[in-house]
Image (tube, rainbow over all chains, first blue to last red; front, side):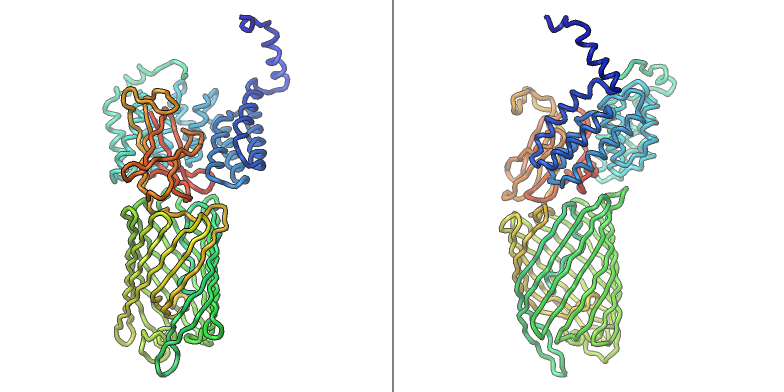
Length: 224
Length: 386
């Protein structure tokens, strides 16, 4: 109980110090998290360069978890230290870029999805269009499905057009995810990715309300 | 010599450096008015190097064959293998090769050639089409060769088969004359059409290949020449393998190499950071998300709603692992279950990257997932779970 009623200065003190230093409050915690996870890297040289790279990213306010995951992927794949460092740095750069594109206050999950989309070669302007279609809802699933479609060979412009249309027509994240899964099944069955998308997108669209009704039903709440 | 030429199209994702050293008995046609054959014992030394870059793979290989005064040859090949950005199943190889030789059977000189080849590489089948131009100087006489080839390959579990047709047009008449494939006057140009079938079996550490070629030589009149070659590899450890090859290698005007019947044995040592993949072609991996049966409990004991099921067709002597963002890239071993490697892993909603590894081979994406670059020169499978 005492902890719950700690003097207010104990809470505000670090906040004021952080504010004065121009650092977000989460930085020390994330730095600690990055270091402890990165310590699982057996090679000392790799561990050092990765920790530095993650600390640098965290100091810019970026989440550490996706960077640690990228480092661990490199360790598992026996990538050389320079390559792991470069991959972590590139991931940090994409996260930062995604933060700018999905602003003003994207969630960590949105940042990760945005970074994945950029890594898959989706132009940055398209991320802005996705955010513009759903300014208040989470764009995690639309971005993930867009990334998957492009990775399967659907032209980015066509994939974006279909996904954004579904978003504007009021499709739910589950319906958008279903589109990705259906296209995956069609491609596995031998259909060309762009043709599969066309067919499946029409199928989902037929279940949605008309554009006018969709506008009226559009959710106004803030994304989680 | 001839059997240990490294193929320039081994564009996998992992870096590699390997060295082959061995001995061979080579029987070649003897030059002269009366056709005969002479046998030479030769020493072989070959090196293969591969380095993945961000958007391409660099490959180089070289080999030296030496049999005292009857045979000496040095060859080098350099190539760049570039996957297409929008269509990862397509890959273009471009490169060149050079050789210098001193052969009792086919003269002294050198050769240079350049090639380009377009590949379609899918999980279980693929094909290629390519072309090359070459120049050879043999005993001071220049000659030129052009070629085009097209082929298809397919894999059935542990068997890999290919069929190809290659066309060559050449003025290097001395090469075929000594091989007994061409009975013509000097300075004659000729055409070759090779129909080749290859069957390869890969299982665990073993690798056996049989190649049958039917060559039609069109000069003064068509002549048909068959050739059969068998080769095998046995992987002793991750880094050491034994190689053996026996059979006939037909004359190759593009590279300036004469026909030879050979038996070769060698040791291959892999020095790169990644050992040789034991059986990269024999893998069929699929990842499927299923609803967990009611009450399903997966270690460490939490009830789960969804499971990712990984199924891999591979030899029972290999070890198979799956790793990904779902396990923080900790490798999870698959278990051998009635002819298939299998794992069921709890999975949550979101986007997951997944890799499968068989033996010491490269990490690959399951074939039914979208493939994305992993930033380490390889690939991962992308799985979106609603």
